[in-house]
Length: 154
Image 1: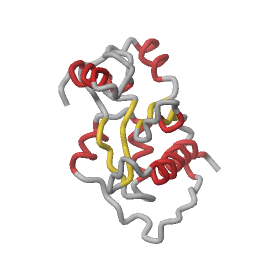
Image 2: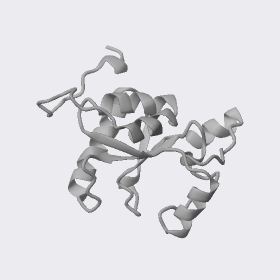
Image 3: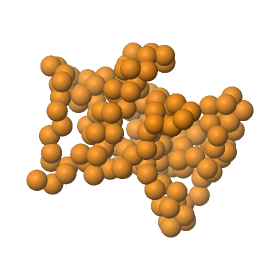
């Protein structure tokens, strides 16, 4: 069976009843096709919000100044269109609920792996960033394809 046809275990008894809000839909439009596919599947299992995709120069540098990122403009998957990184959490978002954030990190990584998509999760970093996901190897892709960071306010 091809990876994209595998069924992922769904503990949710109301499978398929969730939908993304307008902000999440706008964020999904900014994402690379791999993330769009993951997002299409994740919403079947959990009420999820995509709260950040693309970041322009100013937003990226503010994230660095606010100690929310170590990456300057052009060094983050958020700085490209389509974006190779996103921030997403289960709804309602509870920033200090690391148990739920970790469970959902596992869900996102598991769904992505089932689809043959290799993601990096910020919840595995020394500096915990449980809402952050990025496509593994995005740096090689932008270099190979000559993709430049996009300084567009979104």
